[in-house]
Length: 289
Image (tube, rainbow, N blue to C red):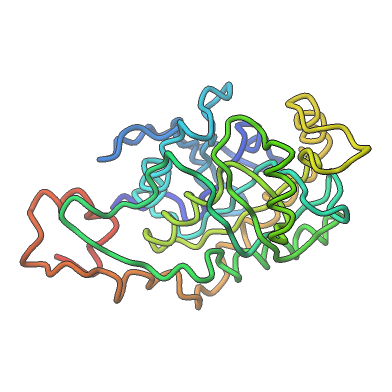
């Protein structure tokens, strides 16, 4: 494994326009699962190496259903990343979570249908624990920084991950509210699942841009609305990510994430093909030679 960066950041391409950030390299990584969304921008800030990835590709070329989540997270693993900090736009499902608020969800509900979301299969079976899908330590690190930056912060809650690319119907939106969901988005669940399988800590910063379509008397979500509120939040989001990098890198990883595969691999090493072991080597080499 080529250890290049300890922290990974997934978000819009504008996130690497940070004060004090020095870009040192740009790496295009080939994976057994295909191409990541874009090349990884390797940068240094306050002595910490960071790998940035534009989730939808520079210029926003890929829809949520087209993202190669496996390749994206595999690339971070190859680069030696131990903690991923994610930022994404979400809709609010509760009146108290207003546009420009920031939510740090700790739970997910999966409403996706068309996405590969595991590295395993094709000769190696594993079942990781996912009861607590977000790394609490990494999430609290970011939320503390967000409060210090003056953001209106909500810790915890449930992120419903929908398929998209269309926004919800009004009936769906009201159904999800009956489930006591806090925010709705299209991308973060698969990232969290794959990061857990790769033994990478994962936390997400959910930037509220709209009220979906459930809120009577409030305009329904549109791309124009999302982009307008993202622009308002861009500087705050950059500040939070920038100021989270050093504490995230220095945090003691005493969570379960670094050992998620310890008892999860079901297939006996003797039953694994050479090809299967080679394909997953960056993920399983700690346990399977």
